[in-house]
Length: 286
Image 1 (cartoon, rainbow, N blue to C red):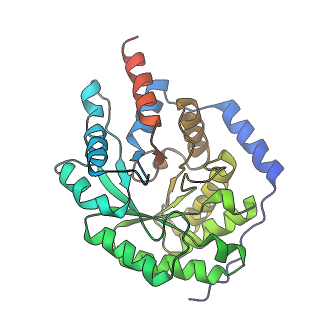
Image 2: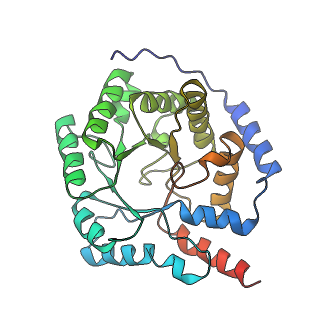
């Protein structure tokens, strides 16, 4: 397919005003503890370090399935997310749970490898048990204006994934403008992304509310045209409960209750889960 879609231009000041108004209005029809439980239940518990070991991965898997034991009604996280070599050991340690095993793949975090190498890495992750793939787009190609390449690479990696969820990381902090973020969102959705994701967490800025709401608008427009729900995953730098609540508030305002679950909303984080658990436990004991 020749990709020719024209995306709308984004006015930064209008985005800022919308966010301010949404946050001022706050969450609707949700108690604080309900909001924190939603946040915990959509976290992709993540470690993506060069120092990761089998022992560390096993520890994260144990932690991921232990949250529900901390109190009545406390959920486990949605998924764990690791590099491809850890797929087998993660699956072995999450047998008989509903926690998904996600793998970053496709030359994460840079995307700067030949497409055939990236396809091979995604195939490796899938064959070794990944339930979900988090890929990165080629930001260099995007910034050169080669939107067809970006579209085609997503199509190719989605083909390898088959029915598995493909989360497409835009690395919004490298795209240069909110208009570019909207363009990249449209390309990813049209190419078959099941989720669009803000960031790798490896550069700054990572997830921002400005990028997030632009991505939500792309999802909303696609849903209104096709009836198909696309998920969203802010990731990178969301380490405080108050920040997570802001993302949830904006999600609710733009897309509504249908998206406020792990099937269509994830938060990529390594430090957030414990802090959210602490908030829930404190509220339960009040």
